[in-house]
Length: 383
Image (cartoon, rainbow, N blue to C red; front, side, top):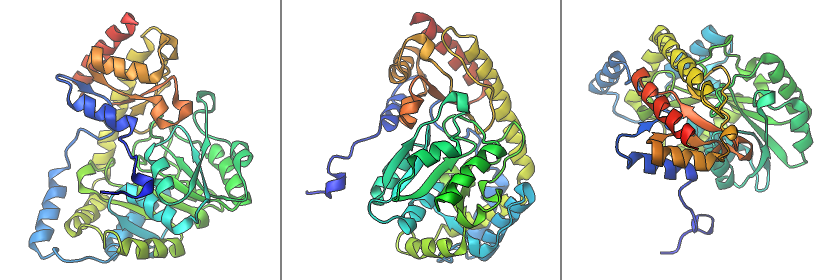
């Protein structure tokens, strides 16, 4: 069988290879997967089941049910003062679809997408699939892994079309400050860039409060805010996300989406409506659990020779600097898995500037985190 040229040599990413190896390792402490260990709350599950029994088993609106889109608007308004209307919202089959549809709607062949790194690495393949060119924007820990407006301007060309940012960040767990956003906003406005702002970890901010990029003056009309319920409401397997952006962009994305998924699972949408309206307190309760886990693991990491880790800011990730161990990030991650039976991800998997770091997801119980840190401590001592 002959495959399309762009996929003829497609291979698993380094990240996927490590996930597969971790799954095959007995007694592994898996700190690589960015998935909450909490199950979806039972009352949310009950709403979905009840909806199906009540007849929500047919096609739903392509853009998503109006009341679900209104619930998204209400959530962002009451929590973060981001005002929007249902025509500015699209319900997605998971947050990943937001990027796919936005890039399809915005890019012509050869258009450039500036990607602030370290970042969620599937961005690169998505840009490639949609005929764009990824322009790598490296950042440093000294910058808080956040680019400045000047950094962005140095990379802008006549083909620049889109800027991709993420806060709270996957993989670093860092949170952008408003003044940093304002610097980025000035560059975006000056060069007419559309900003894809990944804010899937909005509910997990431990220093200050989450600030949507779209609330920076002049940014609402050029920003697509990407969110969802996978992390905040522990609904990864439900595949429910959304995007908030300018109505003309949302309309085009909806028309493209009609030819792909033809809408989103209907009982899931009814469950999402309930979760968005009723579960703020539960979200905040889980965020406190993640904050405590992160603080514990950061303390343990900083006690290891050759390892340094910044204080947790957001999400459920830590991005410790392991360069002092004398081992590069890939060798460190694979060695820790094979010899210590602890799964992490090499920082280099998130962009070249992630070299010298590993990503640790604190998505396991405190007991498992303690076991993982004990094993990692022994591995570091052996280097």
